[in-house]
Image 1 (cartoon, one colour):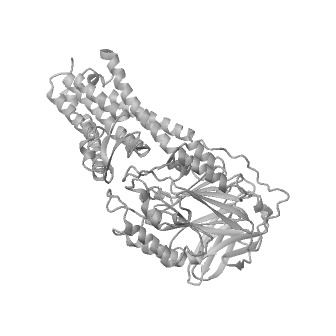
Image 2 (cartoon, rainbow, N blue to C red):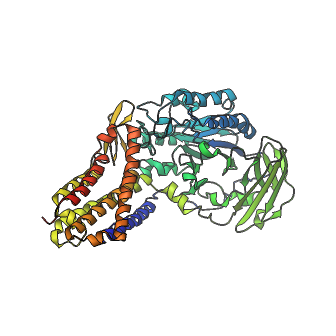
Image 3 (spheres, rainbow, N blue to C red):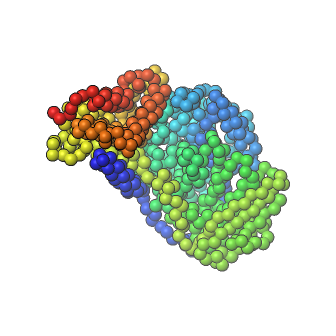
Length: 611
């Protein structure tokens, strides 16, 4: 019983410390200016003309696949041939995972046909002829790649234009310059799935990005960064990276695929006021984003492919996404008109605007997608709601409702979104693993040192050399040594440990490995140590009645079931992804399973554990 209580208490304590540390690791720069006022000499006022305004589009995680899922490519062709021309953006940003690089669940490679499909759609539709097309590689685009991203370099648009994977594009207008900095954080070398989930930026990458930022940040109205990975999913000097991002208004990303379908709107505002906007994928939900910069206020709308019309309210801006430290939000109260962008392949035939459910009256069409209506912002102190209804000639109707305020602080978007996008997740996972591992190893060593005086259920393991030493050596290797040797890249074998991957004379620091290790500790090693301790105790005291009790039997079966299911799951993944060597040469996986089974057999076969 005490062993079970100890395991439960240890896990709960670990989770509490983990969450506390994770929030502590939200270590980015803080906002330096929360003023809602604009300089008295600022003459820019959102009014009723097509001035100081441009818009652009983001799409992410296309996952074009040649082994089925043909609709991804056909819908992307529709997007390029019909939707993009109807929006007519100043530029298009594609934040990674252009191809799926996946034949089956765990069989990953670079398939030239997928790259050709992506390239041909862009070429045949001419979508990149009249605007910059800024694409980046994602983790799928680097599956099973030893050195250079051959597919990306040959078939992407940005490599052909810039010749580098991280780059800067400066959008020049009559009212200012706007820098777009693309950050490539794909792991290099790029192993097969699953140890290719987190991005990596080493010291050389950070130096290059810093130089790029300094070059592109001079004399610009705004800087917008974009990456396949959210900042929380990149293994790097996290604080330093956030400091590089701190002067920008937003980081656009993808990669997280709606968080298993729970969040289509995974957005947050960092402590320094910078927006981080993860975009739900094209792969499953056909999502894309329209962003607009109107009088240097950034607005956006995430929409599904077949939704039309698309409405983007640019003034007044959505209250939750205000960034007083990065944009002149005081221009809202100085504005003379509500401003709305409405896009549709079909002509717009009616537009209505309501403030707090009251129709504001006449809505004028200026030109292109811009619609305006006069208003008096001083009448709307505090938090209010704007509702826009648009109908096109095809009979499609769209409605957008959002809060606005020019004199109150923005509301928090959500704790879950903030945690996922702001925490230093690689560091948090490392801390959680080390905490769980040290508790288990430390407890085992402590009980051994205490000897017969210990009251712990682990005492029978600690006093039995045939159990103690194999278990201790296995756990020490699990936290410090080699897990397995596998074919991480075709023809290239490497070593996997919890701290990272060693292959081709390079080291990819761990992140996904720490998550793997945490799951195994909680669902395999803690339950199995508890089960073996329980079996050993009952064998020593010959308590057959207790052993046969329903509660004890159910607990033991659940522990063994957890051990069996999770062990099979991970061994099957590693064997499927990295070959049979990952099964055979596997001190941290297969050998551990054999060790536990041998221990259970030894307990049942041995006569006593008293010496």
